[in-house]
Length: 206
Image (cartoon, rainbow, N blue to C red; front, side):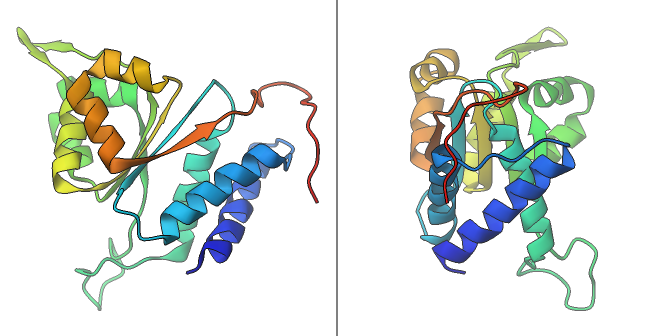
């Protein structure tokens, strides 16, 4: 798939997700730039096997995650190890989990947490809203740091959304995780204002 085709499919997926949520899709220079950067990353054969969508609240990062999940599902990309005679689990899918839930699962359902650690394609929504450290039977654990470390080591497809800026990520998670995120993830900055308003004044693009 070339970059332009990826852009068209992403745009259609975002429009469908916005309409599913009974909102009006507004095409502007911000969404155009975001989609083009993501389409380029998906098709350019980058050494970066992850992507971070960063910016303020309510500007479309989670919507993009859901659009990507729906697009990946619709494309039905088969796993190379899939049984040719079976359809169950034969195609890739993007799992979306918010960071707070990951921190909770590490304590309440460790088996599910480990499944997320090893998931082929994982999206972590709202990185920075979870506690960095969790107490479990007297032991201090770091669920997100441990998960990101293992996914970095295994080079697993990982997408993150966050309202934190790079210096805040470094301060919160430490130099090692910040450096690994820089190495493994393409950064897409969402510079647009929030969409969580009744009306947003934007210039349309033809």
